[in-house]
Image (cartoon, rainbow, N blue to C red; front, side, top):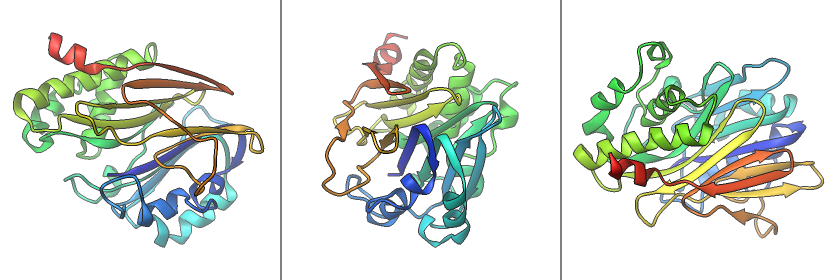
Length: 264
């Protein structure tokens, strides 16, 4: 599975999360410890917010540890809110368009996990993306489809409800035509103002997710795995949770698309 990290708070250089810590995201891309795949070499990406409403976006297909452009970029760019992702494909091609994060307007989104049997339900999932949003469908992943469906479900006005409804629609498809496990998911998304995250699975194996406030940085990291070996203060996010990170405030509420999926 993929690994990702996000940050919100006082502006910092991206390398403070992406490459500098002992167990940074780049280190996790070839030495992950809390997922079934230790190597995440199917591309990487960054989305960061600055002076403009829309995020900057940089993605490529190289392994994260082998791209000098990524090292240079993260050493020079500062941001108060950014998302970073290293990809391990669950079946779709290794291409720039399939690399996370994805962005539409002011929204950015990244995902770790899978929709069970996506190859069987891909056509049905594509049909869930409305005509007005379909021009933004650049790749072939279940992650990008989920993002676009969530936008259609009202992400601007109700981030939790929109993501919950979007996951429920894909979960329902997987239960009808797909395969086990129907959904395993952690996701991060942002409108440039707040950072949101979700952790959910239809079985007992939701991907790992942690968060930690750093007094020295004046910000919060939300990560697949802690960034420093043995560092205290990392709080695991329970499965079935939706989190809102707004400044130093954290709100955690239940997230259960399965109720919607099985009620329809």
